[in-house]
Length: 346
Image 1: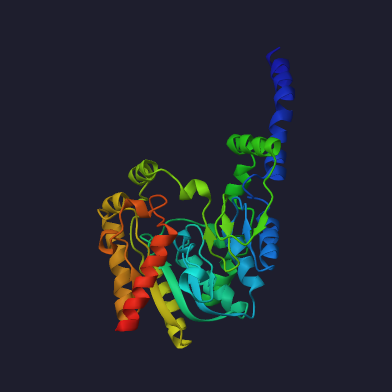
Image 2 (image 1 turned 120 degrees about the vertical axis):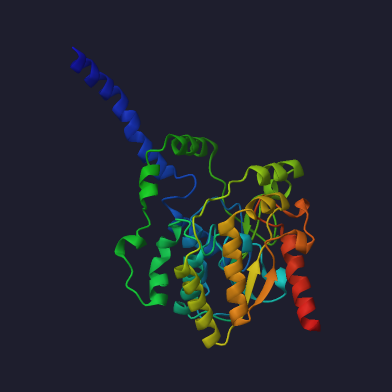
């Protein structure tokens, strides 16, 4: 009797659970499974020379690789690499041609990968801006870089592990069964997707990518109330990275050695953090050691440093931030403008 009851329940419930992965994969509201196709659409639109708005979530490691490939055999004055904290550095703001390959959570592996992608696509540049973060030399266990790992291993001269280039990661497989992703997929299906929009405006209501790879955040981020920004900075997590790794410092020095051999001018960029958030992270022994090691490497190679993690030294108050970790574009532009004005007078 119980067995028959269980079978009936299973027959009723099974179709529901079977449809979840189908909907999650086919609708894919944040482009977990269709980032290649979505990135291709954005990059193809960029080839018009105009900006692309209404961009939703995507795997920006795939996207930035596609941006680089579309700019193969090109020359730029600046190459910009690093995390999302460099994404607003633009050609307009710098007054010079540049290619921005910054990506969410970009770590030392991503930085080296971005450089190697340029090398293998015959992209040349005169100067490089390397965006650094409080976690750059720590093992933050972020494996997103592995989608482009071939390029990292090309750089260090080691064979890539085949599984590292598999776009369908374990997390993506687990996500197929996610009820929260299913709810988002159903909502997206019912409301309809927002189409990409070509525009000459650099900033729009929704997130906009420029054809140099930089971006302008959507209006919700740009007009977030200050009390909300401060609240985010107060609650934003501080990842407990256990130790600064000599291996990662070695990779950064390996990159610097290669850039110097090629005659590139190198800048380390320390984007400031929100004052409230910085007051919290500067108490971490590991984070302080990470910053010290980055300055030590800069000193060893006489690399010029732009900015500072400490907003107070730059005169940045809480109004200069979108959230806990991202300075507003006007703040970023001001930091670079002041640096290069000072450099020109030295």
